[in-house]
Amino acid sequence: MKRLIPISVAILGFSTLALAESWTGTVVDVMCKGKDLAGHTAKCAVSCSKGGYGLVLSDGKFVKFNETGNAKALAALKATGKEKDLKAKVSGSLDNDVISVESIEIQ
Image (cartoon, rainbow, N blue to C red; front, side, top):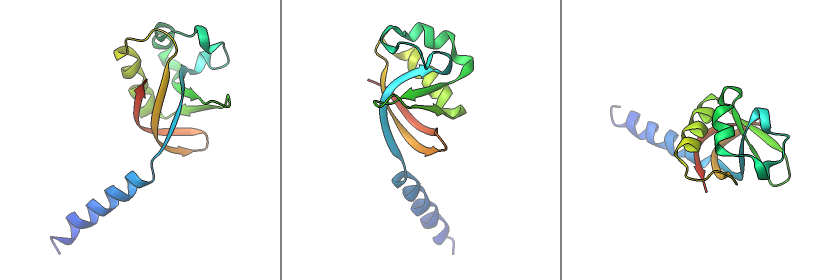
């Protein structure tokens, strides 16, 4: 029985990873999502962090990040050397146009 629990936990963990999806797009703060993304800067996104973040996909659709994703996006924006063209790859799961972010990488 003691061996069964760790094995079950491992299987559950791997099945959760298998459900993760990934998206690429432009990271933007919620306040600027409808503005021209070509001029949107990391400095602007960091200063508007209270509203949260999301990803503008190639088709123009905006998907919001969950609270964990907002924190990860803020950290990634602060760490990036890029000032504009904030393209990112995001992995997680989508539920009602909100991504539960597992990871975010500014490209």
